[in-house]
Image (spheres, rainbow, N blue to C red):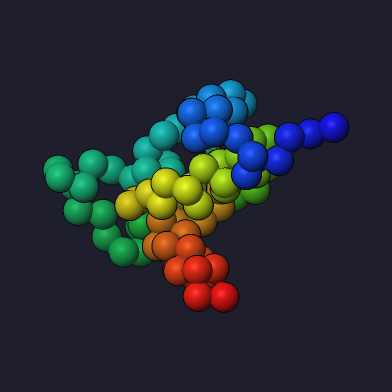
Length: 97
Ligand code: SF4
């Protein structure tokens, strides 16, 4: 029997998300370059995000990551196959529905 991510405390989600996460091998792929020091062209960002989403697709902790991202609503990066902007839109849509 598995535990649904929505029932876990945020701190447990962080631990579960980090254990087995594929993005730990190349964090900049998911987060992008430091926005304070680097301007990432839109085309480069889109290409990077597409690759990050592919990595997420086979990540063993994607469900935990998805739940975590829905709760913390990150400001940047790719989380569970979605950009921070896509997560924000889904969160607003879920609140309206
Ligand atoms: S789903 Fe993507 S962002 Fe989330 S832990 Fe896995 S690789 Fe990282």
